[in-house]
Image (cartoon, rainbow, N blue to C red; front, side, top):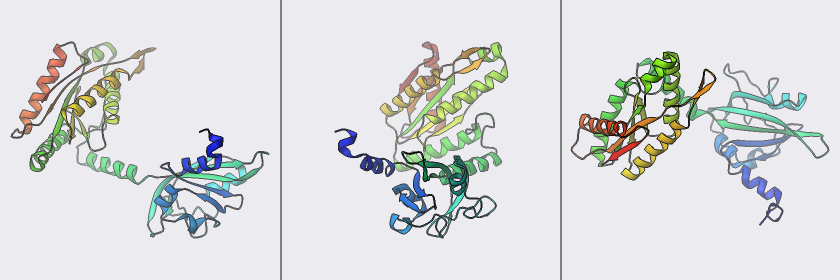
Length: 305
């Protein structure tokens, strides 16, 4: 089946109704003539409630950080229709239930086949999860639990989280995985390029590791170039898969230093919590396995139950 058989309009609607962002189209009078499924989810307004109405008709009523209404006089979509320029903005829309939802909006003009302006497209993404994560991180920084260089948990926070996860796993009889991660030849990096480059390497590795893990996993900085990853509800096979993914992603990350690309590798030890084991023994075993990776040539994973 090709696109013509499916029908371009049908394909178009299927695509837009299955994306995460809210999407709506208006004509040049700002009347809404398309409203996708994500727009319904984010705003609480159904298609039937908005189609044919203007976006300013007591619907979204965008306001900025100061509470200033944007629908009359400062509307990004209206400005786009006037000067035909794309725009982006962080605003707050009005949910049907009455509360405000932080969203990131992007607006672009729509033209017909003759090049005539016929309306505008606005996409908007719910920023609530991102803002909650930022506020949580700020709160943790205030409590001195975040490493200021890498932005992940510091040793104190990692120790607390490890103990919490160990006790939780015992209570619920769940599996718990642990990865001890060390940057290979990090002292050589500092000695060769200086501590500023070393800090850059630490940030790059930390961001790469964090981006490759599940949302409910925990990553913390344990020592100067050591990291600890705590993975709840994981099998030994899955733990191995995550460990190998981290090896590959770090080895394929790089920073330009003195007109050359600097890359580093990591060594990892991984294991699962034993039923009657305390966090100290759990961590010591993962650390021993990590040193086995070091002694076996580095840039590798050593894992054992």
